[in-house]
Amino acid sequence: MKIIATAVVVSIVGIGILLGLRELRRYIPKKPGLVRQITTARIDINRPPWMPVELAGEIARQIGPIPGSRLSRLDLAKEVYERAVAHPMIRSLKPVVRMQTDDPRVDRIVVRCEFRQPIAKVAAAGGYAIVDAEGVRLPAKMAPMWVRPDGSDGRREYFLDTPNQPTSDSRRVHYVLIQGVRAQLPPVGKSWLGDDLRDAIRLTRMIYAKTWANEITVINVENHNSRLSRTEPEIVMHAQNGWSRPTVIKFGRFPAADGSELFAIPPERRMQYIDRYVSEHGGKLTGFNTYLDLRYDYLHVSID
Image (cartoon, rainbow, N blue to C red):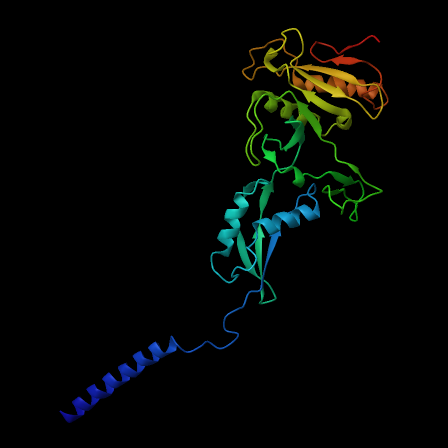
């Protein structure tokens, strides 16, 4: 009986010691080095070729951790994701991944996304706003304004309109100016509503890669849907190269999407009219005729 009692006492004492050690462990400071002290969270974004290096750095700073915040917390990647998905220059976003690096004090936060590329200027409020291919208004200060044809790696290099821009071997990035849009200017990051702007951007995208694209200075949609005149073209392009003679290009309207306009000239064929004209005029679009009219079965040109 005495042996059993002794065993019970030893077991109780043993359990008490074990529980005590567990409680005590809560209050013992952990040895230095057992928990990583993160001092830097490096944002790694996929910079597209058209994006200036300084713009990529600015976006990384804007979506990155708030200066002075604790970098070791577990929800840091989630915080970066939420800021990135709300950024006006980011169109779509993959899950943000947090990774360790060779330096235990530095973590890498990988952001893979699709950016909104500036494609045109839209006249508004005595100035202009920058939009992407979906008509979303972008921050004007984040649009590339200078390009150097042959950068350090043999590709084009783009720059913001800042003191860091090159001064000698660069030129202005060309943005066509869209005029005549009726809808009010939206906030940055929001879509600019209206069929007139939609068609102007559609035409901008069609001419974007053409050799003569830089000669197109204005796309005017003031008469879109024949709201001013039923006899004048709905969409007009203005072309000029330096001080050369300007040329008006009467594009007309885009055919109805349902194919109901049986005799409408396809937009692709109208582009071919211009391609052929440029080829026949030494690679130049402007300086020869007052206007080109693309609305008919063959190209109409002014007789002057």
